[in-house]
Image (tube, rainbow, N blue to C red; front, top):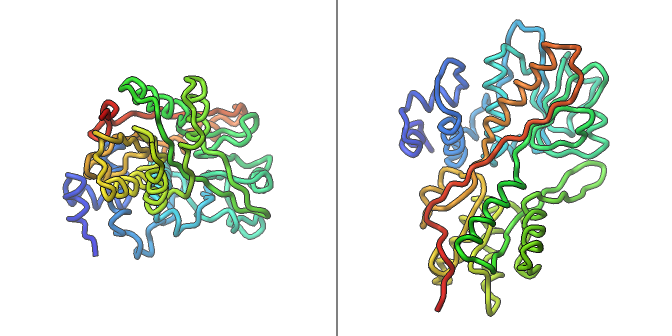
Length: 342
C-alpha cells in the first residue's frame, strides 16, 4: 500500500506537505502545480481509494450552501486525475471562502425534492439538455466546470483545448513533421439516451490539418481515454506500411500505452516517431523518453469556479453570465524531434 513517503518522494516535497494537501489544509501555501502533482501521484498510487472520507463535505457557518454535481461517478473520478484535481480545487476554495459543500453527487442522483437545502450548484463535466434543465432553477446559481453548455444563461470555467491543440501541431510542424497522426478518446454522456460528444482536440486536429492541406483521415484513431486503448490504437497504426512521423495523443494515459507499443515494435522515440501528450500527469516526466505534453491547470479550474460563484453571490444585481477560459502550457521534454529519414 502506498504511503505518504512514497508520494512525497515522487513529488519531491516533504511528507508534511503531502499530508496537508491531501487533507485540504487551507493554511498551506503551495503552488497549484505542486498541489496538482501531489494529488495526481496519490491517485496513481491508489493512496486514497480506500479512504472513506476522501470527499468530505466542507462545513461552515456561512449562509452559502453548495451542491457539487458530477457527470462522472465517484469511482470514475477517483480513477481520473483530471476530475480528481478539479474536485480538490473546489474543496480548497470553498474552505477559503467559508462556503459549505452540503453534498457531492452524480447527476443521476440529482432529484430536487430529496436534496438538502442549498443555494448554488457547481456542475462538473458535460450534461444532456434534459440534465441541464433539471439543474437550473431561477433562484439558484449554477456554475459549469469543463463545459459551457448555455453561454447566454450560465457562467462557466473551462480550459482552452483548441488553442493548445493548435500550439502542439504548430510545434510539430515547425520541427518538420507533415505526416501527423491523432490518437484520442470519446466521452459518452449518460442520460435517458446515451450519446457521444465531440472532442475539441480531435475537431481542431482535423481543421488544422485540412487548412495545411496535409489531412489524412486514415491517421486518426479513436478509442477510450485509457492506456490500453493508447497501446492498441498505436499497434493498429503500426500495422500500416507507412505511418505518421509524429502523433498528437489526447491524454498522457493513452500516450504511455502508445509508448509501450512503440517500444515493443522496436521503434525509437523520438528518432523514428515523435509523441506529444495532454494533461502532464506526474508519470509523464518519468516515462522513457520523458513525455512532451500539455499542462492543463485543472486544480485552478475548480478554484476559479468557486471564485466565479462568489462574484454572483456578492452582487445579486450582477446577472450576466461570465465565461473564464484558462490557458494551457506546452511542456517540452524528450519525446519529440525532427522527422526521421532513412
